[in-house]
Length: 481
Image 1 (cartoon, one colour):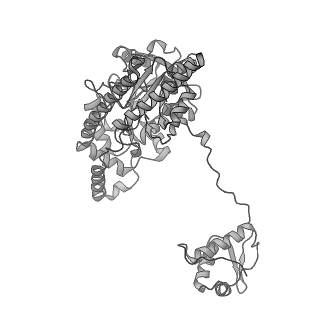
Image 2: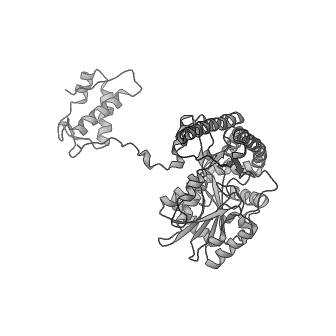
Image 3: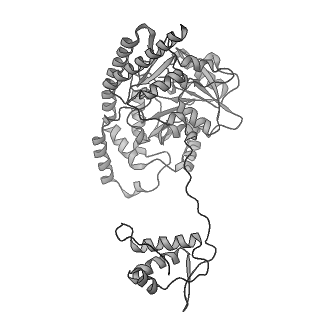
């Protein structure tokens, strides 16, 4: 008789335990093909359970093809089932992109993350509930790949008012964050084509493009943004740029260069991808008008709510030239048909009722206070040795140090002190025209995010950095003696 251990105190039913045990006997070869099983009555008496319990287990095994029966003879094991099962393999963490791994540190100057403690989650929940209570059955069906019209209409109005974007609802594609936007655009690029990217550049864009096999050519930037004089004669397919708040340097693309970039795109028949990175939080003057405003037929405008509300929302959008509407709609459809409907409708109400504008206004005040305090802490700790730039908008700044190189050893010491930072050098790509020296120069500067932190953590973090730097300077002096 089969030896099956039953646990009458666990949540799993007795029939499920018998089913799993018999299946394991079959997989392992302990029960061989065409071997007869005990009758349901005999096994139930042996296990001291009701016959119905055993019958339920047998019926499930019959349904899945593990057993067959012979009329008047009994129940047998089906042929061809034994095989060696494998355990699921563990993931290879080394294949994870560095910038997507964010270790939990006591103090984190991580960039690109808004304050997750001030999201109007209660109001969002109320709007979500309202949406679900008034939803018609048609909205629960598959929808237009471009997204819900209610959201696209609200975005068209909002973007025109706040960013000067020329758009109509039919030109707006709703996507699952900026990452999906870049992924969809990358599929436009052929094998023999390349794209131009700013240098330095967001690691997220680099990962998305490189993972899809897109060849990137870097263009340097200076205090006026992407250096249009360095644009190549060979036409690219796309030009990726962050003109209103370059990431990570924070510089703004000058109007002269905006015009030069548009003229280059017209001359070479290519398209510009405008990543409007956290430009909503501008502290001085009015928001910078979008590049797309100059030529809607040459510029693809990319926006996301990950930097305004939360990365968990996974909601972004593309404002497309008319020539790309059909192609991008098809690309979105074959990727995931459409983005989540309930979240789209909730976001549409959130914008329509003015809560998005209120939230941005509130967060500008909070981020400005943090930016100012971070600057004060840096000056108090480092004095004239530090130069702070990229402070006019956004959720991060760049702190360049005259006499400090944040090499691997110093970074390790900061890591051990539970302080997370990135250097400007982390965001540099290097190729034949942009050698690794640019990255090394960038390691004299820190890119310090203050979006998802507080004043106390800012002070502790800067103090900790200063302590580590002081120790390393003392070591350097001792070595020189």
